[in-house]
Every structure is written in structure tokens, then in C-alpha cells.
Length: 251
Image (cartoon, rainbow, N blue to C red; front, side):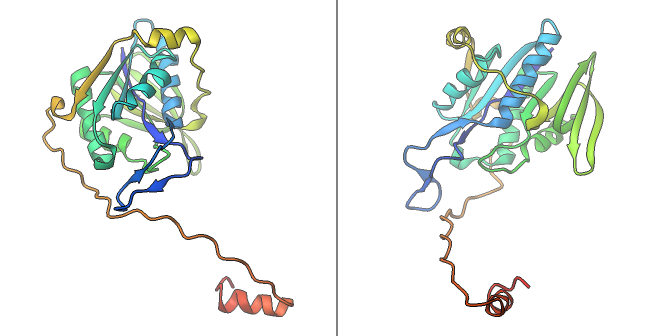
């Protein structure tokens, strides 16, 4: 069995971002982390591999050279067997192109399972897993909170608005991980040292022989949200109700 798992770099949600002068992207010394949902996907891939002897795990990241560090430290150091970096400018790709890049890598690697984080916490689009499954023509199970693999099938418990839903999907398939799927392990010192010597491939988008590399979404402009206005003090309840009705339009 072979599992392909995502290792996406995202901007740290606790960091303050500065928008470039042209308003098209962010600039400065941006702090990054590994996407938390990808951490759950990586842990799930490791658990499946531990339960199924002979399973190979492969982590893939898309971005610049710095992304390679997150693949090694966030995936290979935890126990993933090897890594793949597809070089691309993050500012110039959208969810659809990312899905097609994954599709190209799937055609090269021929995995039995593709495990992705259900979404990236920077864009929050929650599209890549579903798009990839459509392009591949594979069954999918999204928002997974439990995954079991038995033979050529995966049994996935997924979180839906009404509670929990259990699906049985045949392999090959696409699964996207939710936060409650597991508790990601920490990378050990030995794992960090081993990660430096694990196989690591670097590809260009042109190496994937994609039929279409155009993006469907264009960033028109970014802007910083306006700050909150100062509050006002009212003299009595009557004035408060009047302001809520006429100014805030809350009642």
C-alpha cells in the first residue's frame, strides 16, 4: 500500500501580516507553520502504515524552497518515508491548480490513498480534496474523525451537521482529515536526524504534464480590515434602545 499525504505550509494565524504596496500579496518576514489539518493527515498516514506492514508513506508540499523545511520537519521527522516538493509561487496558484498538481503527482506515484487536511487555515477554502477526487474519479470521504483500512476498503467516520456519518469507500480513494481525527505525535530528535537523509524529490509543475495550468481565481486586491470604532456612553435605557434601533439597526 502507498499513501500520499499533504504537508502544506501556512502563515501563522497569530502573526501580524503586512500587505504589499501593490495590494496583491503579503510581504515582510512572514512566520509560517505546518497546516494543523495536514498534521492530522500525517498522523493518520503513520497510524495506517503501522497497522499495515509494507505501507509506504509520501509527503507532498507545494511552494518555494522554504516549503521543503516544513516537509522534512513536519512529515519526514515524524516518520513519513519520503518527500516531494513541487516548486510554485503560492501567490499565483489557486485551489483548482493545487488539485491538478496533486492529480499529476498521483499519476506518477499511483498511491492507494491520498490523505489531505480538510482545509488550509490561511485560505480556508476547503476545496482541494473534493476537486482532486473529481479529477481522479475516485471515491472521497471528507471531514474524517476516524479512519480504518481493511483490505481494499477504508471505513471513514465523518463529522456532519447532524452528527456522525460512517462511509465505506473502496481504494484508491481521497480522505480529508478533521482536527478530531487524532492527536499528532511530536518529532523525536532521532526522527529529525533521520529526516535529513530520507529521499526527497523536487519537481517543477512542467514535470507533471498537466493539460491546463491556468488558475480560475485571481487575487484582485488585499486590504487590512478597518479598526473598531470607539464606543459611546448613553445616559439611559431609552437612548440605548433608540441607538440600537436607528443607528446599529440591531432591533
